Length: 81
Image (cartoon, rainbow, N blue to C red; front, side, top):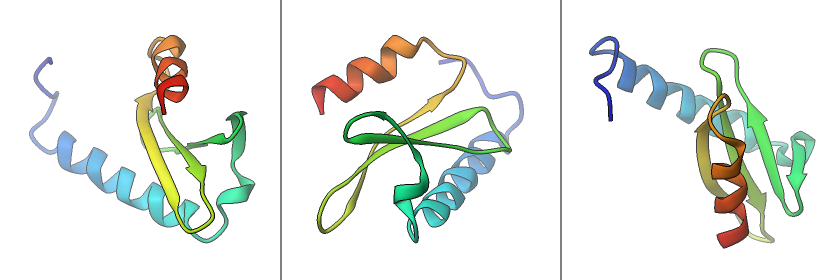
């Protein structure tokens, strides 16, 4: 894995991920379904997407990917979940 561009970058990405989870928790159904039953939430600070599914008692996060990465990566992950 390449070195981060700045020492603060990992903390900023983690903060964005935590913020994304907080935003999807109240109304997860509003996020776009990419492949049933999986949904994708996109966020503004970084070009990342959060992939998740809604189970009866919980929201299950299955991935957090850079949106410019190979789409086959997240599709393959969703097929194995």
